Amino acid sequence: MKKITIAEVEYNLRYTVRSLIIFGQLKENAEMKGEIVDESLMYYAVLAANNKETFRLSYDDFIDIEVSVFVKIREWMKDEQAIVNLLSGKQEEPDAGSEKKNT
Picture (tube, rainbow, N blue to C red):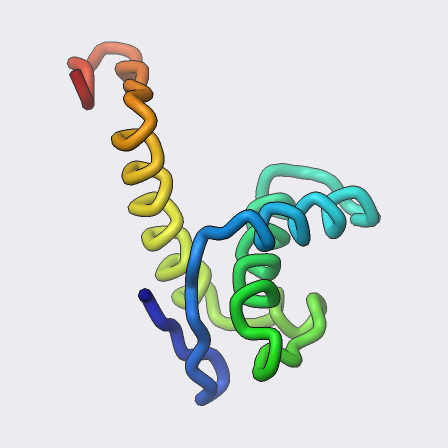
């Protein structure tokens, strides 16, 4: 299980159904819309779902953390999605002007 440290507290990162449900609830109630908002809501949901006893940051405090933390979470999330895609047999579409990434 991957861990990340935010404000000197270590948190678990796991891509779970609970995190998807929390993300859906957060997104439904979000006042702002957009790709970066959705991404930050998903990261927040992952942390809230998997650290029920220790995760106490409000969303406002969470989005004020250093960008480097978001980059680490994004890298972890990309790895998780690649595993899900591999296990489901899903293939990535090639980028314009490049070769297929997975076959």
